Image 1: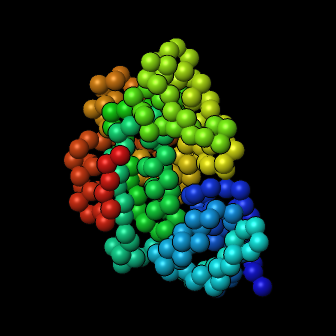
Image 2: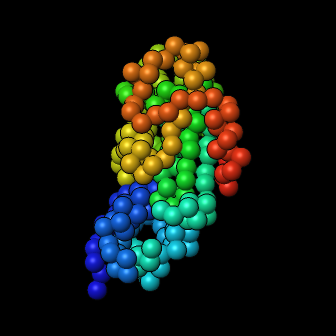
Length: 75
Length: 166
């Protein structure tokens, strides 16, 4: 179960990451955020984002027409 | 935030020296992303970059002297000869075309990125010397800007992990 969803489909770099950060602030620590994106560069970016912030990238999936990420806020 | 976490934070500083629509993107993209990645970010606006802090942005792009600027058109990528690019109205036309592409491709506007930079605590520093040189007035600049010179920039740069000149 995720606490919140960000639909960043149709948005280009760096907006998916910026929208994600904003939404993560609205999720309680330990909570989960779902992000939908269509930017093909987002796979690499979300991995790097999570490594740098220390939040957990729980899953990163390529769906038919978009990407789906689940991030757990750890700090 | 505790003293310790402040000290552990990574930081970025960028000298922003160019103010055309294309060159405005890298500093704002990197600074907003750095802030999103829990880094401290400082942008130092000097010379032609200083205009990016004006309340009313009217950014333009010119294909003149820019042979790498090839716009996607009818499945091709077309450049423009300098002689044509020099004609009146071409800068306005190229700017309109670029802004249209930016909107269609879901790319943020500079105004949008600048607002996010302010919201997320990116430090925006205007070069005081350039303010005097180009006769800019503080009242024409957006709120939240600070003013300083080379020493102000270097104090940030010497402790930053990433320093760029754009």
